[in-house]
Length: 62
Image (cartoon, rainbow, N blue to C red; front, top):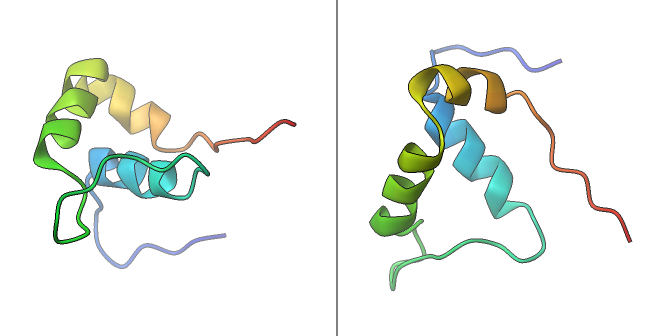
């Protein structure tokens, strides 16, 4: 079980989980998640949906 010491932005939690996926996600020249992709995620999920989606795990099926 993960203990949070501070409230995390649900969008950031989603992006962290997506970084672990084998295909990864777009990053900029500094190795950080691209701002355009961050905006894309905010379009995909409303704040309420992001609150729920942050708890979903990415499952890899081969």
